[in-house]
Length: 399
Image (cartoon, rainbow, N blue to C red; front, side, top):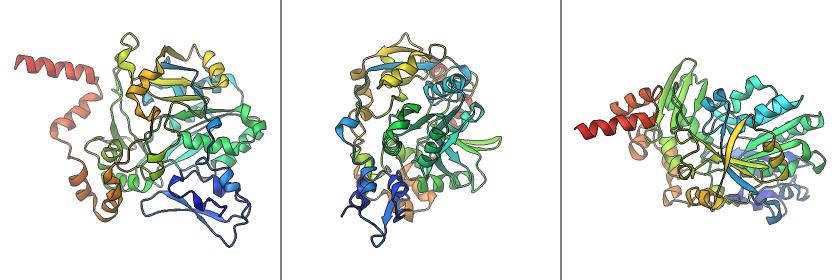
């Protein structure tokens, strides 16, 4: 068999096979867990093998890039930092492109409020940058984004593509060599992606089936410099609800790695050899470098290609950084060494998600937010966690 059917659990859901099939024999459907998988009409299939050639699951060793240098980094733009999940490197790179080049298209994951989902979109002006800022802890649907990227590149645009490593490799396999110089790839340190259908179920329950204008998975103190915390915040225009990750069943199961796509547990991209021009994520070894913004959330920045080095070298006005030991970072960030180990609960977790109502799921896999936690969530908007912890320690000593 020479069709994409042979991929099975290695499929990452990128839709490349659907995009390149010359006879439209491939379509994607959600499986019972809510993940996208290809269906091949074998009667229509012409056995050209284009789907396999363009599949990121079939990536050769020579396609991976050894990191040149690793840095701890933080944006110099305060407005960017406030909205960033960690140090704001992605948005700083995007802002640099918008200010340097006349025609720029930035491709990233954005919340789709109509469907309670996350899709990759293209923005071509700086004012829309907020749509693709921040971490999205769910699988983003690429849909036909590769066709739109090709159109932008053909029209003379400089393109930034940001996504998980498998998504970056998917786009790299679609873009012809003649256009590769004009696209800048940013791959993310990815721990795994849960089901979009599970996120939708969680959001509808938490919002009471009311309209949601936006969601965020990380939170920083509103008025003070601070690190970011793992909170799910649901916005309905000016009204919002915030949940700690332990009290939200979707988020808690994500943090425990129980709900990832099957391919995430055998991921070929979970290592320090990368596929993007640069790699970004949380700097998990930041505590080793106490003289570099110790009270701030900072980013890991890995420079992998000459193109990546060239762009970052021109960004002195946008980001501040210092070199770190990549091996030390790997000690604290296991996704740079190996995929997340598949937990035994993964065998039945989606049966529970399908069959149980949300009350039962929360009771089984999360814990309700206490009054103290609710107060803490509100207080955190104004006071950084470090100050809160210091005050609590002082009270304990006096007690």
